[in-house]
Image (cartoon, rainbow, N blue to C red; front, side, top):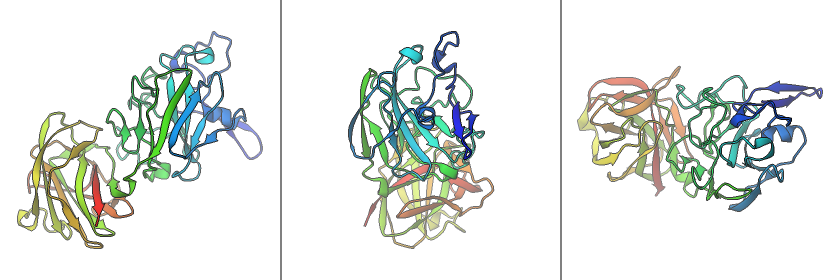
Length: 371
């Protein structure tokens, strides 16, 4: 629960995705303690002033029960969206927490408080569904959003568990949660990496840094919701570049054979014509499963010229590729964009150049070097 302040000075109450006013981590109402609150509550009530950080370095943060220090990261986020970082330990009002550690909160002050969002939703996070005050649960289970519990021992970050989070996900390899912004469904990397999180204690440390290669990759999302053997999609380079690796989304956790094809010009008219495509190679990788990034390397690099539309075809020899429906849109809509490269909505494909399913969004990341 959090408090809302209106222009006339009145206080209203809203619900966050976290059981902040009771039951969270086993809070006992029989104890004569004030309600448990997030740092967002405390800031809005004027009880503390967050410390804004952006410099890449190691930071020290004491337990919130001992010293009300909260860090705020707003660089790279749109107005009204930011991260809050605190150290919560099982003492005083939080004494029944099953696990202490760093809690990271994603705040979007412009969000609709009634629209919970989590990875299993079609089109998430581009659908714009998320709470105003969302705890980034370290285990990536999104149990709070789904009403599975009121907080558990795997929600905090610490060295003996999940110990980092950045634009591509956490140290476990999960794509969600991450440090990307998502206000109004406009998802973009902020580049922030929170890593080297120490063991849980009254005094904890973490390192804040920026992703060095932020400008040399572009991602859609790892949402799933549908799938087949592969996806064809167009890309539009904004300057000369070479695609050298990628992440794909697959349901498999076994070894899989991934084939990569490319062509100059749009996929239109070439969906079933293998002769129109250049074979870039086959590589065998171990799938990471749904919701995870499976990295693919070992294919011939694709050299793209500025302004010249090209097409990619990424396929597995079985129905193991996960992708998303482009609800309410069309093939060739913009699916993802970076400073140098745009990915368009494509089509699903049965193996190999067989049936075409229109209006499908490839789930993945393209990594490239500028020429």
